[in-house]
Length: 257
Length: 332
Image (cartoon, rainbow over all chains, first blue to last red; front, side, top):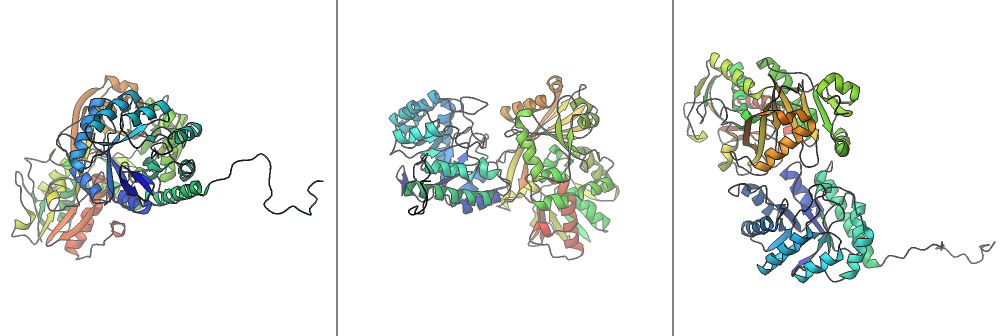
């Protein structure tokens, strides 16, 4: 069973909580996805006096693990402050660390990411860093004490799937024992299945579910695809070949003609 | 029948209008000093755009919202029946395709048709969606015009009066239209913060509501006449009613600039903020809470759905109609 920071998990799907047509639709999607972890943002919702309380209470009432994030933070200081606030609001030492470096693609500022991760780990946080498939950055994040990595598949919300399957395969091969979660860019259940077939441990979804015509139904579709991808990985897929190999016997047939 | 309404926002005033039409004697209690900015409807866009709302809203909003135009035409002279135009910037055209997939009753328009409908946007957009049956009103003028009519009809307004619905006596019926202020009594009610701008520009002329789709920062612009434009609106999951963030203003202005660069020289006339009252499914509800009839949860659909809610409330009070559980079964 998957284990992240000492928490055993059956579901390999994490669900983001923004952009749904309504909180009721979010709650329904949480159900159909069978997820055990939801992510939630605080930076913008907190306002001046934690004015987002009501929404956060609703999230907590979903009875799943809450992984607060630092979405919308662009500097180490912002991210660290938001993480502390999240710990207070949700009574959890988990934090999904996002430090945005580029406004258009929302790709992480990997320098600030490593710095913020170091500070937060020293402060007792269990950090889930949003990173790219870059091996050296991944190594540095592990060095400073992260035990989980969350590389992107493609830019946040882009729905493009796995932009760099080669890079993601390499990352998996380099860190075989680290829980790896595809954080962003998934658009279709087939993308999620592909990542799971590569041996990724978990998929985080938000836009692909929240913005679907029927979010709850799409959440269910992803749950099935992720389960299928994981089973396929465990079952040991065959390698591609150039030659056809008939699965029925050819003996006695004129195959040499 | 002698009825008390608490709250003089769009919900309270539309209810009063329906009740008076059925011969009731109505008293409205309002905690603010006058009709105006204490109600979140004061900051609304005033779009009567049920089909566009179908992008994310339930089908009941699309269906029942279609009655709004005729109701407002009957009760105010302000309805602008010019439709809605929906655009996306070139790199976000997938948003336009998705919007088209999720909505109905539109025409796909090209550069020429856009130039005919909105000459100022003709050079800027080469494709869009036109919803010809949609309309918009000026929320403030409409609310004030309802107020004037109600005063003429003998409705008593008690301003600066904060009352508990349960404590009022001498009325056959009490109707709670207090929106987010009822949050303590109705735990499932929450606030969804919205920020808006009022801009004045002599360089841009628009006839109808314009929506600019964007994956992160969707925007609408509603012309108010005399060079005034309402630009909105953010949707943030919190209950703050007075604080406008720099990011929100920055994003709305950026999007307005993307719609038409002339907005960069516009005057910022007003920056507004309030929180919309919403239930968990973002649908409004009329329901009895003991002897008090509650009309609440209009979310971002106050002007669109208040007429239907007011009629459902009137039918419950005057005809004793059972209010259906699902909004989908509400009748206008």
